[in-house]
Structure formats: C-alpha cells, structure tokens
Figure 1 (cartoon, rainbow, N blue to C red):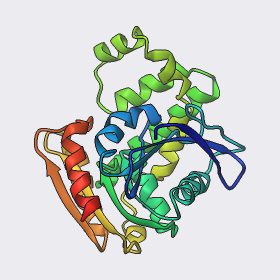
Figure 2: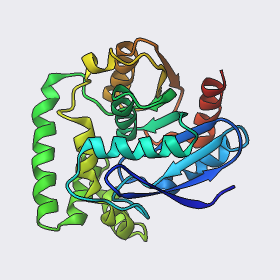
Figure 3: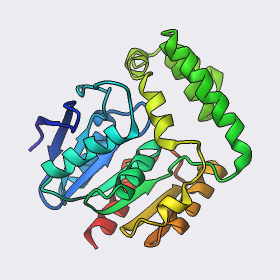
Figure 4: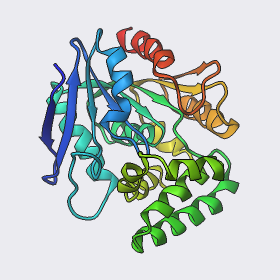
Length: 261
C-alpha cells in the first residue's frame, strides 16, 4: 500500500504519514527542510523488503503543529508512529533527523534498532560560539518573517556557495523551502548546544549503525565516528564517494542488510 494516513500525537497534533511495501516496519526520519516526499526515493528501494513509513515532521507538509515547539513533542510524534507500526519498528534518521532518533531512543521509545546518517553534531567545543551565533540570527530572521533569508542562512551554514543559493532562489522549489523555514529552529533545538551528548548516548542499549560518506566534510565524518563510539552497541560504516546528500541506491542495500540481520 502507499496511502496517506494520519496519527494523532500526544498533544493532539495530526502527523501525516505514508506506508509502502510489506514486511518488518521501518520508519524514515528526515532532516532539515525535508518532508515525507524527500524520503520517497529511499522508501521505494526499501519497500520490497520492509513496510516503510515516511512522514512529515510537525510543522511540515500535511502535518500540523500545536503550541510552542519542544523536542519532547517531536518524540511523541515518533511514538505515535511506532504505535501505528504495531508497537515497535526499526528507525532510520538522516542529519538532524538522526539526532531526533537518538533523543527518542534515549527517552525510551520502543525502537528495535536504528541507523543514522551523519548526525550533524560538533566534536570541537570551538564550534559552539558559531552555533550560538547561527541560532541567534535564525531566531531574529524568523521573528521578522524573513523566511527566505532564514533558508539562505541555513544553506550557507551547511556549505552551499552564494552562486548556488542564488540559483536555488530562482528555482520552482524555493517557495516550498521557504514554507519550511520555521522548522529550521526545530532542527536546531533537537541538536541542543551542538556537541555530541555522549553521556546521554551511553544510556542507549539499542543496536545501532552510524554511517557517513567518504566524500563528506571532515567534521561530519568525525561526528559520525564519535557517535558510534558513544553508543554501547554502535557500529560505524563509511560509504565510499558519498556526501551528506547520500544517494538512495547506495544507502538502501546497507540499511537492508543491517535491519534484516
């Protein structure tokens, strides 16, 4: 099946999701500026082996949002999806979605096993002032309704050059990105101050795999290795030639092998 469904989160927020395929359940958790559609190519590749659930995180796409944002509310969203999946599932998270998976697992959600792709934590405390400056600037832009500039700020943060950002601004996708701008603050909240929460990760006893791309920036690769080390049952894997925008056809077999083991 491949239909749009809705679950109700703990605070009454409707969370829209889609299911495809048949087999053990796997939930895909997108990162910044992602919706369920962003994960559709990966879901299609996993569907022959798994019952794959993709969803719009709160404030995105067809999902709603209620009251002030808190990371705990997003954890409750994932809990509602796990219930819809039958009470437990394997979970994959990418980028800030990976950090959300870690928060949810540490909070005790019934996640059977999880895989992460490049959780964007910092490993060097010297990065913290820059993180704080980004947070302050993002908050100011969103408060003044300057959504396009907020997206530009984020794209600059992740290393996109001005010429590419200018091309994106002229593309048909730009209004959709601007519509998601307020959720950049949610992603930032999930990451907390920015450093790897090693003590919290040490409490997670769930089987885990942390993946990075061999062509990704060194800080992202270092973070992936450090997160894997901090998890008691964590393992690390590198996908040769991949970047932070990992190719679904390269990632899918790795996830399939891990989740089916």
